[in-house]
Image (cartoon, rainbow, N blue to C red; front, top):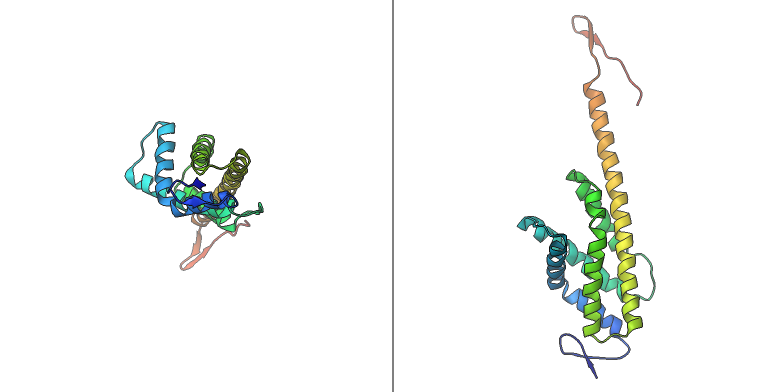
Length: 189
């Protein structure tokens, strides 16, 4: 009989569900390990507050991942789309560049794949089962980067339109023609 990482007996029919449950139940611990590994891989330090925010972000991602890999279909999980949109909008609001995200995805993907592979091996999944899970992880990361970029662009464009509108309002010339009377040119936007 197989045993999982926690020493519990697994059934042959549910190995992928065991990984799913493991990811969901251990999202906090796994997220801390992932963030630490990602930071180490990039070779930089981040403030504690950013570290905690990154861990919280990955906790939600790990739970979404756990839910998605247990599914037999490959439909996009709405929670993943919303999670990714939130990341993109937040980055745009903080004035970050989209390249800050995109450049980190290859290494992040490797860290995720290595961690998932390790979990799968410890749970004694077959090569086909591991490949199936890694494909879903990669699919989710691809969807995530796309939605993050789209949301970043939309939010940035919105901010730009608002700023341009404010500039237009502030730059309108007021021409006095008499006491208490002035003209204001109208501009079409």
